[in-house]
Image (cartoon, rainbow, N blue to C red):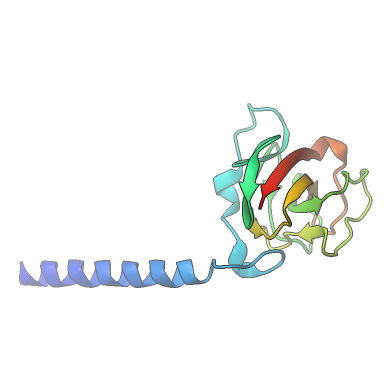
Length: 160
């Protein structure tokens, strides 16, 4: 009996230590940083729903404060890291104050075109106060856009 209690206690301590380490690795990062990711399966819906990408936690017209936590979802394709082009798979990009990218065109990589090439499905964005247009764009493993049908644009207002 004592052995079972000790084993259970050690398991609980180990799990708590892993959780604390994981939480530290998710603080204050975005883009291609490996520490700003949510497992892709959490934000992938069933194929019976409408195909496309969507913002999970924010919607058109939301008033938010910076930093803005953004969660990205998809129906009809799978999220995977960049590097190899696989049919029906790819990764997210967020375009700040810009438009969707035409099919087959590469998504730029700069301060307003954020790549989630490690398969991330969440991020924290630092945005200035005011109105911002956020475009979620899905692209293949070579960062080539799947086009407007695999994008979703919303406008949000960042409060001071």
